[in-house]
Length: 260
Ligand code: 1HE
Image (tube, rainbow, N blue to C red; front, side, top):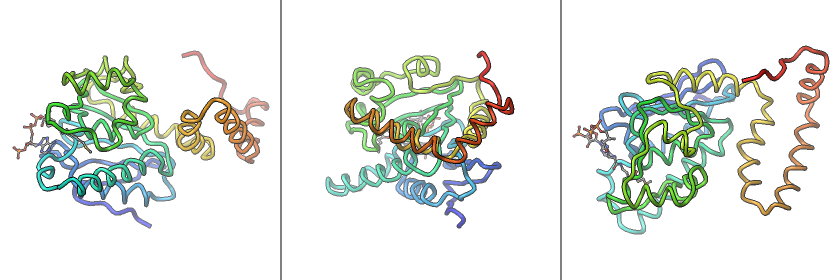
């Protein structure tokens, strides 16, 4: 089935990589309800040929966060439902069928940072800056940011960002854990694609373990986590693909690990 796309959210396949593009540059890719629903639907219906995905944004910025022009129109109950809709969409990114690499540039703010945080790898170019302006706007994060961002940078740094409006640049962002990579301006998408192509060559079950099982282990008490790890390790190593890959190495037919 072909995943639904909209004028504001496009997808194309690059080999085994689904390349997802926020296309609302005139509004700095601000996320309105239509875009959030489209994102949810897209990740629920990724082509089965996709083994990894990349998300990036059109124009000068990755994403300006929540479309603030829609905020006025909700009462408290609708606000809860709206936040839950974001949760569903971004859970679909984090716990969808494939690993997702975010290619970041320009503003990665508010809900844009929440979206980036739902991805598994973040590659930022040097133009990237991060902020959580919810504090200054008199609102709160609502797209999973209070759960995901502290896992990347800690509660104290997120509190600082929201209390003081602190903006981190690309280099600082990498240092504190907002991105795993920084690359020269204009190269984030190419780097993210290269990484996604590499990820697509991993055993699918290992990728699944990393995106679905590892985050759950990290939430478990240590003894539960170790038991879950043992089970996942047993399932992964029992797969025919694991045996074939290990044998290939033993026969000198697979790459060695090379010095960085
Ligand atoms: C928007 C939005 C938006 C831009 N909602 N319309 N997010 C924010 O508080 C960030 C608000 N945006 C900005 O600080 C800046 O726009 C940027 C730093 C991202 C980009 O600056 P710049 O100079 O490139 O663009 P601009 O001139 O500010 O904006 C261009 C247009 O996009 C303009 O509309 P226009 O009709 O006058 O052309 C802006 O109004 C519009 N625009 N950002 C609506 N966010 C699940 S809860 C999550 C909670 C949050 O995300 S709160 C944080 C919201």
